[in-house]
Structures are given as structure tokens and as C-alpha cells.
Image (cartoon, rainbow, N blue to C red; front, side):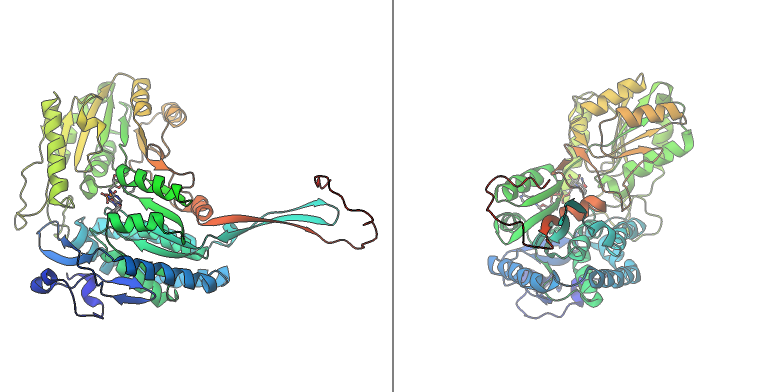
Length: 520
Ligand code: NAD
């Protein structure tokens, strides 16, 4: 598998010295419909997380290039916002077809740059594709409202696009999260400057190419790269009206504050700590399978990973069987057949996860399965941590308090469902949670009493499909409007309300009225 960036025409030959030496192509900026080499002298190395091989060099896009991307988006907005929603939907229909056709190619690039398994990478593309499908049928969600408020007088609303919007993406879903952002932004009439994660921008580049093939005009979608400087530019640039962000708490709080202080609309999905509650009346086999899949799939690098299990009462006896299941998972490169768990994104991420495992041991928890030090054959240099299970975890331990974002399941024990609910509601995060039970009343009690925005009942990773929205809550989100679904459409549009008066005759106008119009 080669880096996708090798498919682009190199418009300038001045790639960074390291990229030239390693014979890899640089990742380009995508500005005004052209894939262009950055003139920066600051490059970020992107290495295959399973091998450490250099895949591409990602530019820290320069200030001039960021300005060029914003200018092209602003210029394109004039015409794009005037096209009919039907014609924008038609382009989205072509885009969804092209993504389906290229799904495998995009997924292979995700394995190369991000490390997840091929089948999981296909799921990454597919869950994003579902939002493109929503963007193909937007008309009813864009409809306004109308009321006759007085004789001859009507009030009605329109949903209008905001202008230039921006997207800032995390590394863990290189296709799905950009697809949460630009298809709805564009279909509602906005233009976008998108910044994929500097760790794995390849999927976004492929999607930009497909968008162009589908008929998205020049300048409507632009892609820039980098990290903090690019993000700060987006927060400060007055021509950018709204920011969609998904990523860690640290970056998200900064972007929400700085973007908000500059008058922008910001939606920010942040970190998580998702709990699964296992009641003794659950179906044992399917529950254990669900737990292993949701804790260790994607090497635990999902914001909806079920990283914390609370075993209630006799269900505590199931933990040894869960350990057996976790041991059976194959850890290797994502392109190797039957791989269940791939590498972590970077060496630093691996070291951080290992440190958090050790902190659990040091603070008195029991390490039932230790995935540290694993070296899959042929991939000895990769950032691998195998499935790890820590039991007897208490809520004051670091491995409970911090989002681990690795293949580590921390297990707590509770006497009753009430105790489990109390633990979850006391946790600052509120992204997702799940209960495993065969009792309707228990499931219903959990659903009603749990203070978490996305609840699974015998569903370990309850990420809603569009037209529902991704409704993480509490510490897992900043901003009021969620990604995709109705809420996503509302985020990318603003309401305009018109009050009109069409009188049949001018005869009753004898005197000016200066009192407050009451319209009765
Ligand atoms: P990250 O915050 O490190 O990076 C996200 C984006 O922010 C990147 O584009 C990066 O360039 C930028 N960034 C990073 N540090 C920054 C800083 N100091 N200042 C300004 N910008 C900065 O996140 P990540 O490691 O790529 O992604 C993993 C995190 O994302 C996890 O915490 C995970 O839970 C979260 N996530 C949340 C959701 C959700 O919907 N709640 C979905 C996916 C991922």
C-alpha cells in the first residue's frame, strides 16, 4: 500500500529534504480546487504506526496559504450559497456513490496512516458515508416555518448558510469525522476550510478529490494542514464564521474559548470515559463478546470505546472468562488477515498508555492481563499494546480518572444497579454508556436515571445513525448543537425571520404611529 499523496500531481518540486531523501511524497494543501505543495519549511513526519516507516511529510501550512484557502472559500461562497439545495444534493448523491466505489482504497490508506484493521477502517468510511447520505436528502430539514400573524401580515423563517466554516479533526477516525463535517456544511450552502489530523490526513485528501469529481466547485472545500498555529489561525480569522471540532479536552476547550471569544459558533466534541454495566441477568456470551469488542476494537482509540466495565453482583464471576476472550485476540498490523488489534497512533501514545497501566498497579489494582511489551512477528518496531485488563479499580485511581485511549479495560465492582448508576453519574464525562441485561425494568431504570447523552441497551457502542445526532453530553461536549442529524443542519445554518405586510389599500394611513407595533 502506498501513501495516497503519491497520486497527486506535484505542482512544485520543493519537497522537504527528509521527504526527498526517504522518497516519499509530501501531503499537499488543497486550495481553490488545486493540490499544491506547501512552501513551508516546517514539516511533520507521518510514520506507519505498525512499522515506523515514513509514509509522508505533512506541512505546517503557512499563514499565506491559510489566507489563500480562506479567500478561496469566501469567494466561492457567493455563488455556492446561491445554488439550489436540489443541485447541491445532487452533487452529494454523486459523492456518496464515489465514496462507496473507493471505500476500500480509502480504508487501505487509513490502515497505513492510522493503524486500525482493514475491516475497522472500512467501518470508519461507512459511518461517514451515512452522513453523506443524510446530506443527499436535506430539503425537509431546511424548511422554514410560516404563520399568518395578522390580517395581511405573515411571518416566516428561512435557514441560511453561515459563510466560511472550518473543521478541525482528530486522528482516530480519519474518514468518518471529516465526513461528519464537510458534507452537511456544503449541502446547507456553506464553504469549508478543513484541517484533518496531522497524524493521518490521507483520507481527507482522497475525499477532497472525490468531492471535486462529484462536482463540488473550486474553493468550496479547501484542506490545510498543521497543528497549533493552523488551529489558532482558524480561531482568530474573522472570515471564518463557525468551527466544528472533534478531539481531546485540552485542544477542544482552547478552541471553544478562543473561537467563541472571536464571535464564532463552535461545536466541540471532546474526550470520554464510557462505562458498561454488566448485570447478572445479562446473556453472558454475547455480553462478554460485546465487551471485548468494544474495549479492544480499534486498539481502544475510539471516543465511544467501552473502556470501563462495572460488574454488578454475581456478574463479577465472569471476569476470568473475559480475560480468556481478550487473550484470544490477535495483535498485529491492520493489513494482516484476522488482526483484531492494531498499533497505537504514536510512540508517545504507547508510552502514555503503558504509564497509565503501571499507575493502576502502583495504586493497588490487579493486572489480570498485561498487554505491554508485545511484539507481533514482522512488526517488532510498531506501537503495539495488547489487550489489557485491570480489575479492582477504584474511582480515585489515575487509570479510572484519565481517558486511556488504548486497549485497556478497567473493571470496577458494584453491589447493585443503583451503585453502578451513581458511579457513572459522578464521572465528569458523558459521551456514551451501555447496560447489559435481560430485564426490561432494569434497562428502563438505567435509561431514565443515567446522565449520559448516548445510551446502549445491550448495544456496546451506541453511536446513533443519522438522522439522529451524536449526542454526547456533560464533559464530552462544548456547545449546544450536535454533529449530524437535525442538530448538525442547525449548526451550519442560521435562521432569518421575515415579517411581511401586503395591504389591499392605503386608505387607513392617516397618521404615523410611534407606539410599539403589537401586530394584533
Ligand atoms: P487532539 O486534540 O490531540 O487533536 C485534535 C485536533 O486538534 C488536531 O487536528 C490537532 O492538530 C489539534 N490540536 C491538538 N493539540 C492542540 C493544541 N494544543 N492547540 C490547538 N490545536 C490542537 O486529539 P486526537 O488525539 O487527535 O484525538 C483523540 C481525542 O479525540 C480523544 O480524546 C477522543 O476521545 C476524542 N474524540 C472525541 C470524539 C467525540 O465525538 N466525542 C470523537 C473522536 C475523538
